[in-house]
Length: 319
Ligand code: SF4
Ligand code: SF4
Image 1 (cartoon, protein in one colour):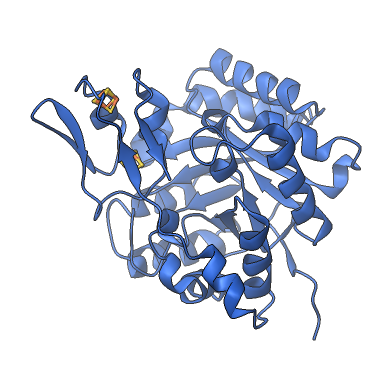
Image 2 (image 1 turned 60 degrees about the vertical axis):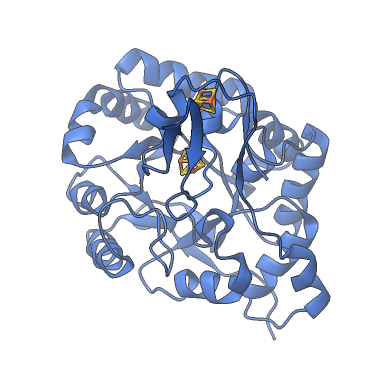
């Protein structure tokens, strides 16, 4: 059996990516909070195993890990995607420059608008896109993308020429899809793919909620014909081994499965003072204030950890 990881061209871009993309959210300060050395070493292990695609974001705080992981490696052997919430020309320029500086690289393969919802929010970011187009022309970035949890956004972005790549949320249970079912999302993805967009999916295991049957969860997304790559959050060598085996269609040891079977949860510490910032931040409606404290609805929470980034009391964590 061939034990390499398949690669695909990311839509009409000239970028070739491994079907497994290393999602860095899980190693950084919003989740496992590994040391930079530990996180970078994990990314390096993935690169050595044939993964060439690394997904990060301004919000994640994981640029130092990527910087360390790619140091000394031929830059063209690695594909780096990042994103930010910037919506003005100047702020997007700052975001891209900061990403270049923090990861010590001359260019980024893909830079995206983070968490877009529809044509309306995309229109609101037109100045940011204008900067990204200038950056693409000058070779600072190779492709422009959007990340989204919304079916409508996938449909709308599919028709926008400036957008090269779409990074949609997809899993078999529909956890985290803001405005439809997995079938709706798949139809939108097929439409975008047919417009030539590169597609790499996120949250295939529902942020950890579908870990009980991780093979089924990952295979559901890997086997979709209109998805070029799948970003998977990885935080241990065992998870990396298991994910690689699943992507390669290999059997793996039952003990490996046991070691990685860990249900994640969002924990809100008792010192929450009920400021409500996390409730405002959660785009999944998974948080509400009850008796002066934030409370999570586990049915709605996709364990993205984004609420943590706004908590002034540092009392939220995904563990
Ligand atoms: S509650 Fe927090 S971790 Fe859960 S979906 Fe909302 S922002 Fe993400
Ligand atoms: S942001 Fe933090 S302190 Fe404020 S309500 Fe949420 S958990 Fe509590």
